[in-house]
Image (tube, rainbow, N blue to C red; front, side, top):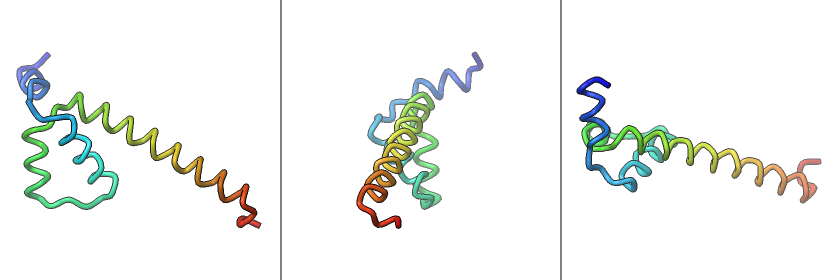
Amino acid sequence: MSEDLKQAVQRKGSFWQTVKAVGWSFFGVRKASGYEEDISKVNPVHVIVAGLLAAVLFVLGLVVLVKWVVASGAAT
C-alpha cells in the first residue's frame, strides 16, 4: 500500500462528517471550501461505506415511491 493511501485511511474525520459530504454529493451542490475541507478530513473507507448505504437507501426509496404511486392508482 502506498504511503498516501495509508495516511488517507488514518484520517480522523467522523463518520457523520462523511455522511454529510456524501449527502451533498448526491444533491450535487457544494462550496469549494467545504469540498477542500472534506477532502482533507474524511476517511476514504467511510466514503465508500456511506456512498453504498446512500445508494441503497436511494434505490429503496424509489422502489417504495413507485409501489405507492402504482397502488394508489395515480399512475393510470
